[in-house]
Length: 322
Image 1 (spheres, rainbow, N blue to C red):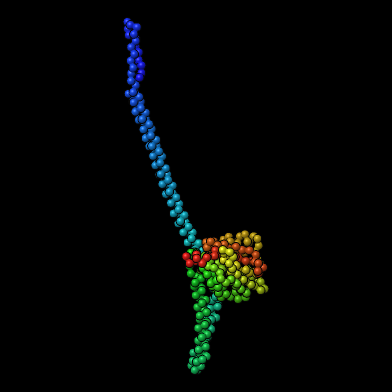
Image 2: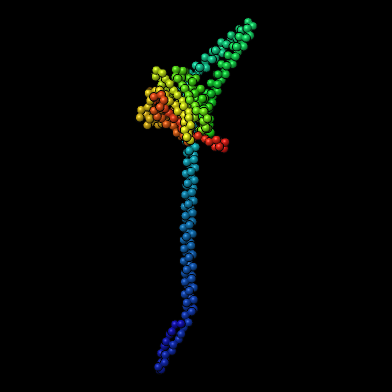
């Protein structure tokens, strides 16, 4: 209660009035409650506004991120297409360098087939059937060899995407060696190969790995062409979780400066006008896209240089799953 007092005029009395403050307290309580509710609503509104702004900002950020991802995807696809084009162009350049000597190799059996055919007709006219049959067998063997050469060229020349899969490495190495041996430049070079038995599959793309090996062999021939006894050796072995392909030569080796720039585009140690300096750069990029490595070091076997391709070996269960 609130006590109010007042003196009564003409007397010694005072009048005391006790006023109940309950209604005031109730009014104050309601006012406080209203104030709290209003404050909560204001805070909720501010929080909602802030949350909305955050959501809008996040939406903008997500949209920007999606645009960036889309742009990066398009850029990667464009880069991949450009790189595949460069890889195919480099492959055509290798074939162009080999074409003259391979054409010469095909001209010889073609001339032999022509001669044998003429002789066969004459032998048949004379009734010498056994000799004619032998000529026909020689024609069949010669054309089969020519078909093997042209078939390998067609296989090598086709455009391929880098889609790594478990591959039998010996088959790729043998195809590459067969192809380069058709070139006249390889006729004076001792080319030996040592492929370990029981090799696991390796993760790569066969056609593009063959391109890398052909390129390394062609570079090795360039390195040994002035040697008295030019020699190249190819070694394929498993080392731990890797399958490694080594191409050794007995050329002049690599200087420290050259070794530091070998895989840079347009860098070359060859004479001006001989090569563009793209072969090793593209080969390195191909191998890296396999998840492997390509490195150069001094040869431990033929005193010249060695280029080593390292590829991830694939376990049998992984190959079955793939």
